[in-house]
Image 1: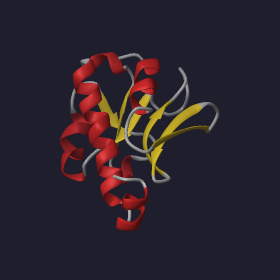
Image 2: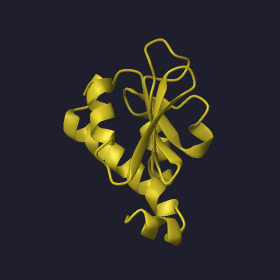
Image 3: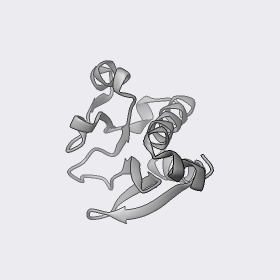
Length: 116
Protein backbone atom coordinates (compact mmCIF):
# COMPACT_ATOMS: atom_id res chain seq x y z
CA UNK A 1 0.00 0.00 0.00
CA UNK A 2 1.12 3.54 -0.60
CA UNK A 3 1.25 6.05 2.25
CA UNK A 4 -1.83 7.72 0.74
CA UNK A 5 -3.73 4.40 0.82
CA UNK A 6 -2.59 3.78 4.40
CA UNK A 7 -3.82 7.26 5.32
CA UNK A 8 -7.24 6.52 3.80
CA UNK A 9 -7.44 3.11 5.50
CA UNK A 10 -6.53 4.40 8.98
CA UNK A 11 -9.26 7.02 8.67
CA UNK A 12 -11.84 4.20 8.41
CA UNK A 13 -10.92 2.59 11.73
CA UNK A 14 -13.39 3.10 14.61
CA UNK A 15 -13.01 6.45 16.41
CA UNK A 16 -9.72 7.19 14.60
CA UNK A 17 -8.67 10.82 14.38
CA UNK A 18 -6.07 12.33 12.08
CA UNK A 19 -3.73 15.21 12.84
CA UNK A 20 -0.53 16.55 11.32
CA UNK A 21 2.36 17.11 13.72
CA UNK A 22 6.15 17.24 13.75
CA UNK A 23 7.00 18.80 10.41
CA UNK A 24 4.29 17.15 8.35
CA UNK A 25 3.94 13.74 10.00
CA UNK A 26 0.39 12.40 9.73
CA UNK A 27 -0.61 11.01 13.12
CA UNK A 28 -3.56 8.70 13.64
CA UNK A 29 -4.96 8.40 17.15
CA UNK A 30 -7.75 6.62 18.96
CA UNK A 31 -8.91 8.15 22.21
CA UNK A 32 -6.10 10.69 21.96
CA UNK A 33 -3.39 7.99 21.82
CA UNK A 34 -1.28 7.42 18.71
CA UNK A 35 -1.40 4.16 16.80
CA UNK A 36 0.12 5.03 13.39
CA UNK A 37 2.49 7.64 11.93
CA UNK A 38 2.94 8.41 8.24
CA UNK A 39 5.99 10.57 7.62
CA UNK A 40 6.87 12.56 4.52
CA UNK A 41 9.81 11.20 2.49
CA UNK A 42 13.23 11.84 4.05
CA UNK A 43 11.80 12.71 7.48
CA UNK A 44 13.80 11.62 10.53
CA UNK A 45 11.18 9.01 11.42
CA UNK A 46 10.44 6.04 9.18
CA UNK A 47 7.91 6.33 6.38
CA UNK A 48 5.32 4.29 8.33
CA UNK A 49 5.44 3.51 12.05
CA UNK A 50 2.85 1.80 14.19
CA UNK A 51 2.24 0.29 17.59
CA UNK A 52 2.51 -3.46 17.86
CA UNK A 53 1.44 -5.88 20.55
CA UNK A 54 4.20 -6.14 23.17
CA UNK A 55 4.42 -9.92 22.75
CA UNK A 56 5.15 -9.51 19.02
CA UNK A 57 7.58 -6.60 19.21
CA UNK A 58 10.86 -8.54 19.42
CA UNK A 59 10.20 -10.76 16.42
CA UNK A 60 8.48 -8.10 14.33
CA UNK A 61 11.16 -5.48 14.91
CA UNK A 62 13.70 -7.91 13.42
CA UNK A 63 11.56 -9.17 10.53
CA UNK A 64 12.54 -8.33 6.97
CA UNK A 65 11.57 -4.76 6.11
CA UNK A 66 10.89 -3.79 9.73
CA UNK A 67 12.99 -2.07 12.37
CA UNK A 68 12.41 -0.53 15.78
CA UNK A 69 10.64 2.80 15.29
CA UNK A 70 12.80 5.87 15.90
CA UNK A 71 11.85 7.61 19.16
CA UNK A 72 9.06 5.08 19.88
CA UNK A 73 10.79 1.69 20.09
CA UNK A 74 10.67 1.79 23.91
CA UNK A 75 6.87 1.87 23.59
CA UNK A 76 6.93 -1.20 21.29
CA UNK A 77 6.52 0.57 17.97
CA UNK A 78 7.93 -0.75 14.69
CA UNK A 79 8.78 1.06 11.48
CA UNK A 80 8.69 0.36 7.77
CA UNK A 81 10.83 2.47 5.49
CA UNK A 82 9.11 0.95 2.45
CA UNK A 83 5.50 -0.07 3.11
CA UNK A 84 5.44 -1.95 -0.20
CA UNK A 85 7.30 -4.87 1.45
CA UNK A 86 3.90 -5.95 2.79
CA UNK A 87 0.77 -6.91 0.90
CA UNK A 88 -2.27 -4.70 1.33
CA UNK A 89 -3.91 -7.40 3.48
CA UNK A 90 -0.85 -7.64 5.75
CA UNK A 91 -0.62 -3.87 6.11
CA UNK A 92 -4.29 -3.57 7.00
CA UNK A 93 -4.00 -6.41 9.52
CA UNK A 94 -1.04 -4.74 11.27
CA UNK A 95 -2.82 -1.38 11.35
CA UNK A 96 -6.05 -2.91 12.69
CA UNK A 97 -3.99 -4.61 15.40
CA UNK A 98 -2.17 -1.34 16.25
CA UNK A 99 -5.54 0.39 16.60
CA UNK A 100 -6.90 -2.47 18.72
CA UNK A 101 -3.88 -2.51 21.06
CA UNK A 102 -4.23 1.22 21.76
CA UNK A 103 -8.02 1.07 22.05
CA UNK A 104 -7.82 -1.82 24.53
CA UNK A 105 -5.45 0.18 26.75
CA UNK A 106 -7.88 3.11 27.04
CA UNK A 107 -9.92 3.44 30.24
CA UNK A 108 -13.25 1.62 30.03
CA UNK A 109 -15.14 4.90 30.29
CA UNK A 110 -13.25 6.29 27.28
CA UNK A 111 -13.84 3.05 25.33
CA UNK A 112 -17.57 3.31 26.04
CA UNK A 113 -17.58 6.99 25.07
CA UNK A 114 -15.97 6.11 21.73
CA UNK A 115 -18.18 3.02 21.29
CA UNK A 116 -15.19 0.72 21.04
